[in-house]
Length: 186
Image 1: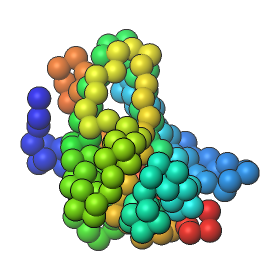
Image 2: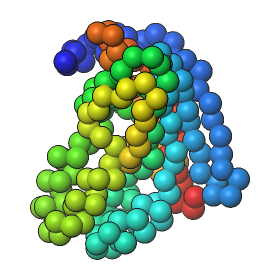
Image 3: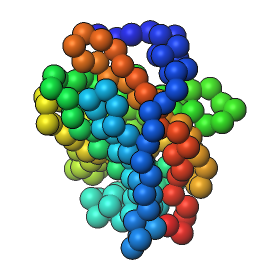
């Protein structure tokens, strides 16, 4: 069930829960994690080199892997920590760069159109789709999933991620504040 963007924006105006932040000593890549309302969300930076290598190994050309690596890419993990199922729709999530309007995360369907337009082979497109965070999913208690999400944000820049989910027939939302894109050197 969908809910209006105005409702989301009104809910997002409340203070966000505290998030944990850590940096991997070996890679220098950062992770933001929040537990709120029975859900855990974790975003871990993926460096541009990691994104390039991952997709070139799956059949993307250097130019097309660069197209994706130019985005701000994160490994996204969602866990249901509660006692009831939760539903998520990535289309309900928004990210906000300071001074700009909230933006939706580009969907798998939108990426598929880009890849087809640029002649990316079907096996590479399938690998891409499987590596992305699911567009919709119901998580039973204890369930989790992971996949990549990408944001049109400059390297080293920060944004706030407003995420939403539904449980027990109620809409919930929260935010991860000041998530920072990996630098080229990461």
